[in-house]
Each structure stands twice: as C-alpha cells, then as structure tokens.
Length: 301
Image 1 (cartoon, rainbow, N blue to C red):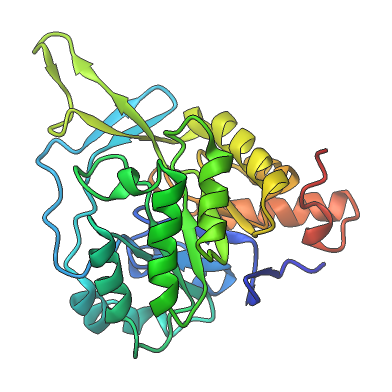
Image 2: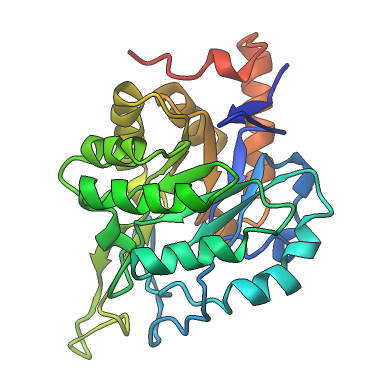
C-alpha cells in the first residue's frame, strides 16, 4: 500500500498530521508517538515577538469537545528556532510552522524570521484563530483580506504556504478562493468555532476571555461539510481537520476531498491518537483492497 501523499509537491510519509496547538513542538509526544510515521508536525503558533496569551481560565470542557482561549501564547520566533526546531530536525516527518500575527506587517516579520532557517518544510498561515483581539480570525473572514495577507507572506516565503481557514464565516468557499488568489499552495480547514460557556452559579463566563474556540468531535460534521465544499471549488490540496478522533473520522475527511488529515484535540485525551488513526487507515485499506491512499480522495460526488 502507498500511504505517501503530496502537499504542494512535498511528499509526506503518511496522510496523518499533528495539528497546531495540540502537539507542542513534537518533543512532548515523542514518548507515545513514532514521529517518523507522521506525515507532518504542525508546531504551536509562532509570532515575531513573544505573546503572553489570554488571561486564565483558558480551557473549558464541553459536551463533545473543549473551548480554548489560549490566545496563541508563545515565546517568539527566535526562541523557537534556537530551542525547539533542532529536536524536530532529527526526524523524517515534515515540519509545518504555524505563523501568527495581528497585522499583515507582523505576518511579514515572522516570515522573515525564517528566511535563512533550514529544516522547515511549510508555513501554515494562521488567519483563523478566534480568540485574539486583533489579527487571527479577523484576517480570515474577508476574502480580500485573506488574499492580501497570503500574497504578502508568499512574497517572502521560499517554502509552500498553507492557509488555515476559519469556519466562523457565512461562505467558506469565498475565503478559500481569496487565499487561492493570493497564491496559497494549500489549505487547512477548519479552525475552531467561536463559542462561550457560562458558570450559572457564579453568573460569569467560564473563560477569562469570555469567548473561546470550540474543538473536538462536536465540530466534525461542520468540518467535513466545509472540506467537501472547498474541495469542489478550488484546485489546492486540503489538510482536513476538526474533530478527528478515530480512523473512521479521518477516512470521512479523505473521502470528502482532503489530501491529508490533521489530528488536534484527540491528542489531549489520547496521546497515541495519531498512531491509532494511522493504523486504522492501514487496516481499512487492506480490508477494502485499496492500494493507494489517493484512490480514496474525494470519491464523494
């Protein structure tokens, strides 16, 4: 069986990717996961300067998922390059660096930070985080702005640029087309859905930021629908993500049109989720006598 897939001309060992913000920078899960079997690791969001993130509480459990309002806390690009990237370079898995900013200029600055850095295979342009006050989702809810920020980073990048899309829009296809017009090499969808939880006894929002991003199994049907719609409308490869917890979930996304799948919240409850999903895909392909993973892609008409 051939489990290798290509995203923007780059070959991945398998279609299973670790999602940004749920897998640290790889080292945290290396006790549980054979990193070389993963197609790619998407590291936590990286900005030009360190970001402190949002006030606590920043996590709240819900039925079928969690709300998070981390706010893309990170120590900045320089720290990541010096202290975290060297570990990842030891493995054959591809490295996707998730870039974040509050303005187009900040996205440009963090892209410049990686100009002479070896060992990074993709940028993932985070224009869809719903829990920062500027940038993030505000960049990804207008087709024109999505196009502009994508084009700005593409002028700097020497590696493929994946644009991560927000589901918090009326028309996901128009945003995808905006990113495509800006020169995106691939898309990742979906990011989290904006939500809220209230403590009825304290009569206060549970999260310090009031709102947070909903992830986990609860959002999977929305994600599958959006992957299907976008795959029919653009020519770009798609990394499907949103509520994937089992191999069956992953196969749904591939059949809907995703080239690869990204596992996020499931890593918190099951550190070996990526490995179990990959093994399940292999068993399914054997049972169905499917020799090439690409033969499943987009078979739903």
